[in-house]
Amino acid sequence: MESGSRVQSAKLRAPNIRDVARRAGVSYQTVSRVLNDSPNIRDSTRDRVREAINELGYRPNQAARTLVTSRTRTIGVLAQQSSHFGPATTIQAIELAAREASYRLSITNVASNDRHAIKAGLDYLMSQSVEAIVFVTPQGRALDAVRELSVSVPFVALHANQVDQSRHSMSVDQQAGARLATRHLIDLGHTEIMHLSGPRDWLEAEARVQGFLDEINEAGLKVRAPVLGDWSSSFGYYAGLELLRSRDFTALFASNDQMALGFMHACRELGLSIPDDMSVVGFDDIPEAAHFFPPLTTVRQNLPEIGRRAISVLLAGLRGENPGDDGIVLPELIVRESTATL
Image (cartoon, rainbow, N blue to C red; front, side, top):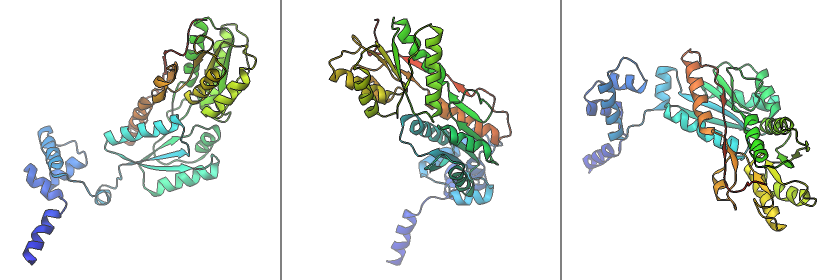
């Protein structure tokens, strides 16, 4: 009975590094070098070890690897608490890119954007021995706090401030995206265009307002004061009911797709047809945008590319290499059925 228990226990035991070595026909030191990305390994040997790892379902002991290599292969992400599409999708993109590079994430969210909260989040990440940090800081005050702090590991801040393009910053060109949206409406013959903006303290909202105003001014059209919103579809709906009382405009550019959705709801409720009576453009190209009624013309941010570039910059920094200065990712206008010629 006791012997049978030992056999059952052996069958249930997780595979270890020596099991991998036996399966691959190499020494356990060779397996260790493969796990630690040593460059002095033949490709055929590396492939054989990885195949054995996959066949056995071997999972390295992270704590043990950290003790041996003094590396955690962990990247920290400090973000402000947000369920909005842009920040949430950006973090997903960072995680995917990190995983592809055999890194994992340690994520901490801060409840406010003041210096004390940002510092507390940074201290927590450093206590986890992260090798590098990504700051997802969409609000201006948070970015100011990051600049004031001393960060001892490679880092990159993802934000929309086109003026501060250092090796530590990266963004989608929000201003260019807003210009694409506004120019599209102008090219369709619209001269009376409203803009629903995001909150004043969000860098993305500020950049999109500036792009809208630049395009309107360049076209010599009447400038209408942007209406400050809160990113929500509810705001878009109630703002639409109020703005459409006068109906002195024929097109609207919303700073995100959710506000565009709310505005479209208000149009339908008041008996207006989109795009026959009103053209609408959003921003973000959320997955649902193609299924709005009608499908929404919008600006697509290449957030997966932002994630890839952020991880690429950090890994270059860890290797002591120059990460380059290409911190701007260009957006794309996606034309659907919510806009039409006036």
